[in-house]
Amino acid sequence: MRSAAATVESSREPASLRVLRNRNGWAIPASLLLYTSIFLALLLTGPGIRIPHYSFQLLPEEALEEQLVQSLYYLHAQPPLMNSLLGVTLYASRLLGVTEHSILVVLHFLLGLVIVTLFWKVARALRLTFTAQAAATLYIILHPVVYIYLFLFSYTVYEMAFLLVLIWATNRFWESARAKDLVLVCAALCALTFTRSLFHPFWSTAALLFVLLVTPRSSRYMLVGRRHVALAATTVLILLSWPLKNLALFGFFGYSSWLGYNLSRSLPIEKHELSPMFALQTPEDRSAAQGRAFELLPEEFRDVYVLASPVKKSGAPNWNHYAMLNYSSDLQRATLDLLRERPRAFLRKAWSNYQRHSLFAGKNVYSGTFSLMHHGNGMGRWMRIYDSTFFRPLTDRPPRAPLTIYFFAFPLIVVIAMIKAVAGAGRRSPDWRCVTLLLATILWVLAMVLFVDGDEANRIRFPTEPLTVLLFFWILTVPWPRQRQGARKDRRCLESS
Image: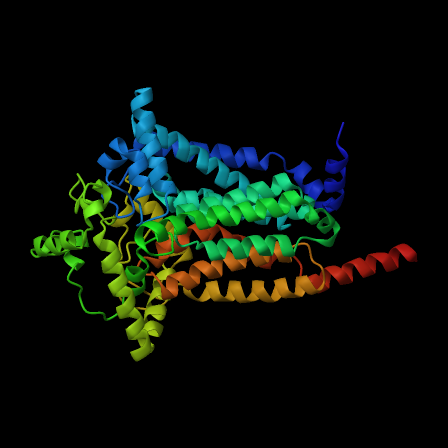
C-alpha cells in the first residue's frame, strides 16, 4: 500500500509525465544494455583503464601507498577526493590481491550506469518528449569521449556523475522538501567541491541557498524544520573545512594552491625562476630551480615526502611540492599587476579560451589531433565522426582553435534558455528552477574557463556537455510558458461549454 507522502508526491507530477513514464519504462534498461555492450567491447579489445601517475593532479604513487593519511593531510595542490580514492584503491588492491586497475574498472562501469540512468531521469523531469529524451541519451551513450574518460582515472566522469546526481536530487527535493532528499543534494555539492577546485565552495554554498530559497510554495512549509537548517549548516562547514586546513598549514584559503598559476596561463608574464622545476619535460636548468625550491622549504616540512620531493617515482614533477606555494603566489601577483596595466590582455585570453571551449572534447588543443586521449579500437575514427558532425570547423583557422558549429550554437542555446526560464518563472512553469540550475552550472564553468584556466577549455567543459544537450532539447520540444497557459485556458473554455 502506497504511503501518503508518495501519493502527494505523485499528485504533483503532471499526468502526461506519469503516462509517459509508465508507457516507456523499457527505455532506461535498453539504454543501460547499450552502454554495457559498448563498455565491455572496449574493455575486451582495448588496453583497459589507465592511471596517469605522471599527472600533476595526483600525489606520488609511493606516498599514497606508504603514507596515505599524512600525504592527504599535506595535500595543497588539489581537493582531496581523487587522491583519497586512488590511495584507498591502492590499499584495497593489496588487501584483496587484485590489481588497482580491476577495482577502478568496476567503479567506472558503475559510474557510467549512474550517468546514463540519471540523464534519463533529468530529461524526464524537464518534461522532454520521449523522442527528445531518447535522442539526447543516445548522444551521451554514443559519445566516444565518455568512454575515453571511463577508461582513464580522471575527475571528469566523477564530475559528470556528481552534477547529474545534484540536479536529479534537487528536483526530488523541490517535489517533496524532505530532509532525506536534501541530504543527497548536500552530498552531491560536497562531492563536486572535493573533486575539483573548479567548483569553489562559494559556488556550492550559493547553489545550496538557491535550492532552498526557490522551493515551490506547496513544499515550503516543511523548510522550517530544524533538520533542513542543520543539514545546510553542516554542509557549509564541510565545504569550509579543507580551505581552513590549508589556511592553517600553508597560509592560503582555498582548495588548490594553483590559483595564481592558472590565472597566469596564456598571459604575457615573465618566466619565473621556479618554472623549470614544474615543467613536464626535463629542462637543463631544473637543478637550479630545485636548489631554490629546497631553500624555500621550511625545516619542519623537510621530512614530509609530498612537500619535499621535487619529482615522483615516475620522474614527473611533484606539483604538490612546497615551492608551488611561492611559485603560484608570485604568478598571482604578476597576473594582478598585468590586469591593472593591460586589461586587454585578459580579454584576449578570454576570446582565445572561448574558441578552445568550442572544440570537440576529444581533440588535443595543442596539436589539433586526437592523439592526447587516443584509445585504439577505432576510437580515432569514432571521435572524428563526432567531431565532424557536431563540432565541424566553419572557418579556415589554425587547428588549435578553429571556429566551430558549437562556437555559435552554445551562446544561442544559453540565451534562449535564459529567456524561456525567465518567462517560465513569471508564469510558475515547473521547469524554470531546474533550467536555472543547469544554466548557473554551465555559466560558472564557462566563466572559470574564460578568465582562470582555459588552455584545455574543451576538456574542462566536457562534464557540463550533457547539461547543454538537455537545454538544447528542452528549448526544441517543451512549449513556451505562454503557450501552455493558453492551452489550459482553451481547455477550460471547452469544458465549461
